[in-house]
Amino acid sequence: MTSQDADRPETVGTSRRSKITPEREQEFYDAVLDQLRSCGYDAVTMEGIAASTRCSKSTLYRQWKTKPQFVAAALRSNSRVRFADIDTGSLAEDLRRAAAAAGEGAGKDTGLLQALGHAVMEDPELKCALREALVEPEIAALRAILARGVARGEVPAGHPALEYVPAQLFGMLRMRPVLEGEQADAAYLVRFVEAVVLPALGLP
Image (cartoon, rainbow, N blue to C red; front, top):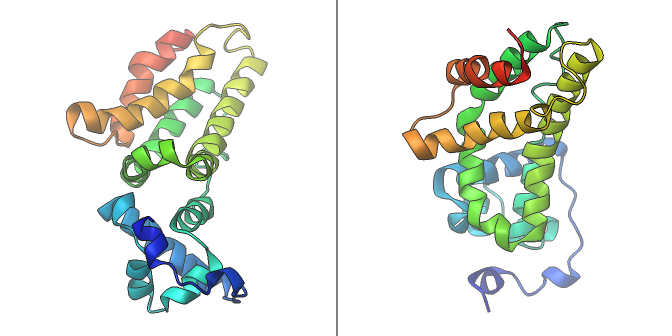
C-alpha cells in the first residue's frame, strides 16, 4: 500500500462527485500548481491542498480519486498557447516574438517540468496531461508559424532545419537552468534565435 492509498478515505468509491463552481475548481488547480513548483510532485498531498484551500480532504477525493488524476486535471486547466496570435508577416520576426513570449513564462513552465520530471516517466496519465497542457499546443502553434513562412516563400518547404526549430527553442528553455543555473528569459531566447535558429534557416 502506498502513502497515497493510505491517505485516501475508504468511502470514496461509493461517493458521488460533488458540485463545485468553476472558480472554486480553478482555485484548487492553482493550489496544486503552486505546490508543484515550490515543493515538487512527491511533496504534494491531498491533505496539503485541502489545508491551503480551506476545504475537506474528502471533497477533493470526491472530485479527483487520486493525486495523479488531480495533478493531471490541474495541468490541463493551465493549458494555453502563447504563440497563437503571432503573425507579423515575417518569419524571422515571428520567431523573435515567439522566443520572447516563451522566455516571459520560462520560470513557471520550467519549474513545472522539473517538478514532474520523474513522475511523468512512471505515470502515463501525467505524461499525457503534461504534453497536452505545456508541450503540444505550443509546438503546434510554432509549426504553424513555420508553415506560414514556407507558404510565403521565406524558407524552402524541404529545408532540413525546419523540423528542429521546436526542439531548439524548447530544449533551450529546459536546459539553460541545468547548464548555467539561470532561466532562459526573453532576452536570452531572442539572442539564441538570432544567433542559431535564423542562420540555420537562412534568414537575416
